[in-house]
Every structure is written in structure tokens, then in C-alpha cells.
Length: 161
Image (cartoon, rainbow, N blue to C red; front, top):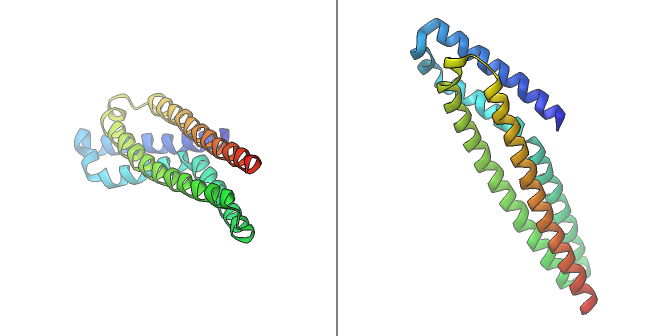
């Protein structure tokens, strides 16, 4: 997680430096010409921010595919139910990740266009990014809890049948 935070800090500094340059070249309206670039940079930051969540999603997908293959070969209805639940969970996580990426990029772009030209500082942006990393950890934790619940149900069903 610290690698991601360091990468985020570098990208945030680059963004702030570019905003400062664009404002100095064109005044407060200097940013209007660069809206797409700002959004692209913010989208890149959001993508970096969500790396751990995407990695977790990939691992969940691989696990679901393994369980599904095992369920088909053994014809175990409990495993098939678990595989279906896992597929639903990783699709939900994929949707959450996509929505987060666009939402984060939008908020960062807005923050960048409004706040950064006034302050030319990185601390506010770093604070937001750190908080978003914490939120992401909570999302992963929630999905792990849901996954654990499914595994517990699977174990209980397996021994009660």
C-alpha cells in the first residue's frame, strides 16, 4: 500500500505543478483550455489509487473460477452456489471499482481546478488521496467479510447434508 501512496504523491505533485504552470501562463482562466488534460491526469491518479482493489478483484475472480470448475467436476450443488455467489461478488466489486474511478477522477478534477490554483499546494490533495486509500481498504474488508460468510455457509451446508 505504501508503494501506491508514493506513486500517488508523485502523480499529485505533477498535477499541482502543471496546474500552477497553466495558471501562471493564462491566469485563472488558463485552466479552461486544459480541462481534458486535468481530467485525464485525475483519472490516472484514480486508476493508481484503485490498484489494490483491482488486484483483489482479480484474485476473487480467479478463486471463483477455480471453485466453479471444481463444482462442475464434482457436481456439488453447494460449491456451485458458492461459485455463483463469488461471481456475483466480484461483478459487484468490478462495478464499485468503475464507479469509484470515475467519481474519484471527477472530484479530483474539480478539487484541482478550484482549490489548487488558490493554494498551489499538495497537502490537500495528498490528504484526500490518503483518505480514499483508507476507504478502499474498508471496501476490500467488506468484500472479504462477505466472502468469508459465503465460505462459512458452504462449510455448514457441507456438514449438515
